[in-house]
Structure formats: structure tokens, C-alpha cells
Image 1: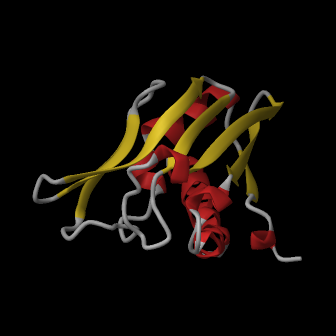
Image 2 (image 1 turned 90 degrees about the vertical axis):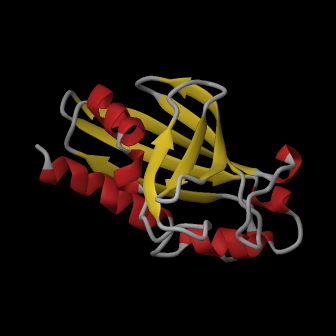
Length: 160
């Protein structure tokens, strides 16, 4: 059974940081976590914004000023967890129907006072309908969530 045979992708990483800092860096510096080449707009991304509140969005703003709101924040519970939608369909376009979107939950678990395990679960991928497996494959492969998490971990070694 492959990982995309079920509509869930799990990834985790451990960072050398207290839980509060681990959570803050993930949400406040999400633009440094998300690779700029992961872009569905016509123009290059100037910034990625993570609105840190329930009802907020994650969106990209292009150099030409256009915006692409590709996620909605469903839960924001510092320093333990954040949940957001994945509003991108199998054609790599923004999905406007919330019933056809998946969810990403990121949990922060203190292993020691200075070490935090970050667990990411991308679930309900099958809600995207026909072709959902392509999203599962993309987020599970090395250029998906593993790349995001390695870029995230690098923020702690670069800015200690």
C-alpha cells in the first residue's frame, strides 16, 4: 500500500528550539518555509503571508500586487497546533468550494525544554475529488512537505 492509497500524508521533524519558538517561527516565517517556486500565479511571489488567527488565510502576494489566497486557517492554538485548509485542486488552481479541499494540521510537541517535535498531517486528500492522488503524491514527495520541513528546520540553524 502506498502512502497515497489513503487520503493522509504524515511527516515530522525535530527542531532544537523551545515549543513557543518552534510555533512562532513556523507561523511568522512561513514565507521562508514555503519555496518561492511553489507558485500558481503568473508573476513571481514577493511574499507569503500567514494570517495568525482563526478565519485568517495563507496567501501569496506577487510582485505585480496580485494575491492568491490558497489556504484558510481553521485552528490557531499557540504553541500546540495550527490547522489550515489546502485550497488547491488537482489542476493546481485555487479551489473555491470548501467541500473540495483538504486540511493540514501541524502539531508542536515539546520533547525537552529546548527541543520540539513538529508533526504534520495532510488529511482528507480524497475530498479533492478525481485526481486527488496527484496532490497526495506531490505533497508527500521530496519537493512537498519534506522540503517545507527541511527549510523550516534550517531557520533554526541559520538564526540560532
